[in-house]
Amino acid sequence: MPDPKDDLPEGTDTIIAGASTTENEEALIVREPTARDKALEKIKSGSGKLSSQAADKARGLVGQGLERSSEALANVSKLVGDTAAGLDERLGEEYGEYARKAAGALEEAANKIAAKDANELIDDTREFVRKSPGVALAGAAIIGFALVRLVKSGLDQDKDDES
Image (tube, rainbow, N blue to C red; front, top):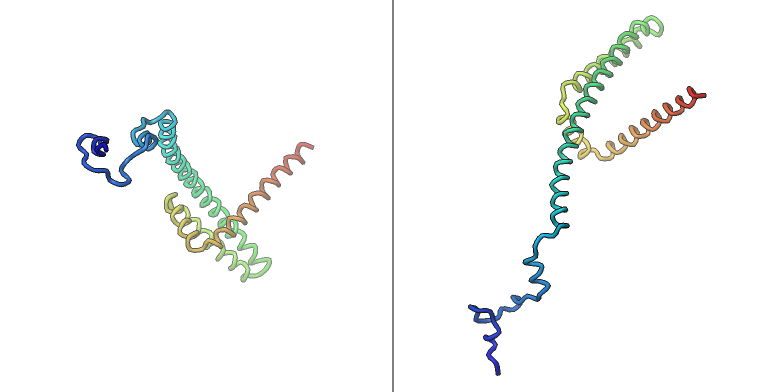
């Protein structure tokens, strides 16, 4: 009967259960990276760069949006404040006072928005969505509906202008 130790690699005394490998397993362990593997690695590294560029671009757009929003709110606040005197004369001082309070609240909101940077707004939005996902979802739906209506009304107006 042949000695089983003769079949073992040099320097090995015994066989350990599960230690032997088949040719396929050995190929998986030692194989060289293929062109596909290299391409996947390039894609992964490129996607990281693209995502950081997209995040930077989004922050820039959020910053522009903050600036424009605060300007728009300030303009609306001024408009509401300017109409307060007319409301005093036409409807009574009570309604004029409501308009002044609304103008003050709008001006305060405009100042708060102007004071924030994009990262603060993004963090605040994330925190709000975590705390109130239902309200955030409803708000997103309302904003989406309003945007669709604005786009449709703009397209309808373009059709009327062409006629």
